[in-house]
Amino acid sequence: MGKGRGLTPREIRALMVLKGIKIVDIAKEAGVTPAYVHHAINSTGRNRGYRIRPYIAEAIGKTVKEIWPDGAA
Image 1: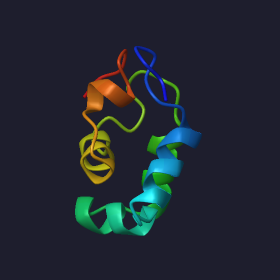
Image 2: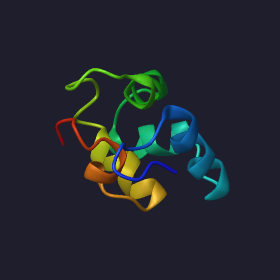
Image 3: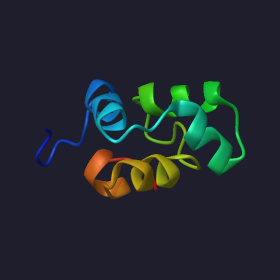
Image 4: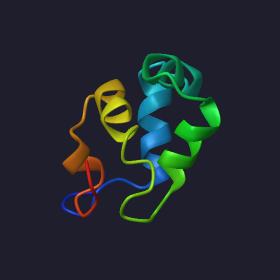
């Protein structure tokens, strides 16, 4: 997995599967729709889904910086 370059959406989803986490689980925790979580995982823009990123990171046991090193927290 991405050392210094962050994680790809595929790597994020793979970690979610390994940990038994579903998009709907993160959405419920964050109080957003599953579509919003899906968008945040697949976004490549700097500020895309920044509000949901901490929830995604926590769910897969990573920091926001490990997943999106150049993006906003």
